[in-house]
Length: 442
Ligand code: GDP
Ligand code: MG
Image 1 (tube, rainbow, N blue to C red):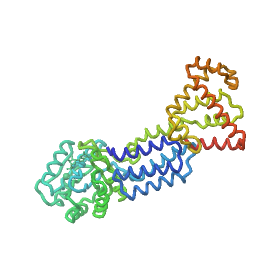
Image 2 (image 1 turned 90 degrees about the vertical axis):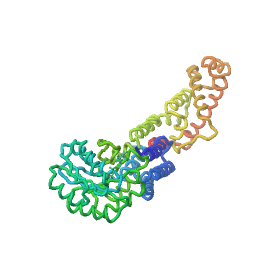
Image 3 (image 1 turned 45 degrees about the vertical axis):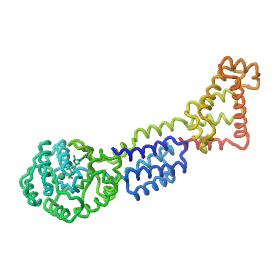
Image 4 (image 1 turned 135 degrees about the vertical axis):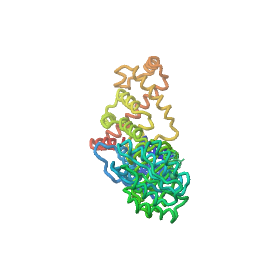
């Protein structure tokens, strides 16, 4: 259901969930991806643009709630804006009512009449069906059969061309809680249909005037919804055939912009392929909200603020031994792929294109083994590590001597970097700031 629309949105959100840092560039990219996904899912051009703008603005301007990471905030904004886009759901009172169905040929009115009958039956109300489609000869039989399938009373007059007369008679004869009136469609909106609907509307004074609109109508849905709205003032929309289209954004948003709530959706030809429309649940399912949230959670775990703070603190201590380097390597490995870890660092460090991340990760593993083969004295004062000691460590750990040389060089470089960061102008306050920045990411 709505595969194309859903997939586009899911991949946009997944990309953000896994992004290195949540900065302006990442938000911009997300907004563009979401807009593209909406457009390819047939969402109205203007609405897609507005949504992207709001996502951009809210993501960057709104202060996020305490305990919420920037990533969670942005994902939540997209979710909320999508719910806003598909419109509010309609309340469905379970009490006696008259319901007039309207829509063009083939939109699914008659099928939906049967589905509605079943819907109310299941909730303890007694429905009845009225065949007021006098244009299509087969419509009478179709509705009669449906009524037999769902065991609901039926009223129709075979061959009668005056729908107003059929309706008057039906209202007199039928004893039911919910009277569902099927009406004639046309190929296109014309005055014949509008007048007929107006007459039926005056006679029945229905509680609900429902527009039945197929999901695959795309962008044209907006114009149709508006026209029906003008003709009979629709109180709700039913979107049918959501199972049969990868897009459907047109029908969804068109309904929303007319101001009439989507009340039900049809998801198949059978009578039970029908459900009430809940914008939250709908968007949740569309974007795979559970999966996205799991991804966001994972990004959060990868670098816990406390761990980052500890590590930064140790890194900035003047004394930096191989033991510390070892802990650092281990922490990095636990955090996940090197590329992601660097991306989560303040400023969102990027790995240069010519660096092979896989190779780096392999090297870190070997460095870890080598350090594990060293004596405590060697670890706390690497300056005592002579070539003969290197040979011993190499034999003990199975790590080539060349790697151990590189390890010692890497250690020296890191130590120098730590000194620069910690020794020079960097004060404790600056460290705290750095640690705070860590918390903003993730
Ligand atoms: P009407 O002309 O508006 O009364 O439309 P119908 O009720 O006769 O439906 C037209 C076609 O659409 C029929 O073949 C139905 O089986 C089919 N249809 C209606 N609703 C759905 C739906 O939700 N999903 C699918 N797949 N088909 C539907
Ligand atoms: Mg019909």
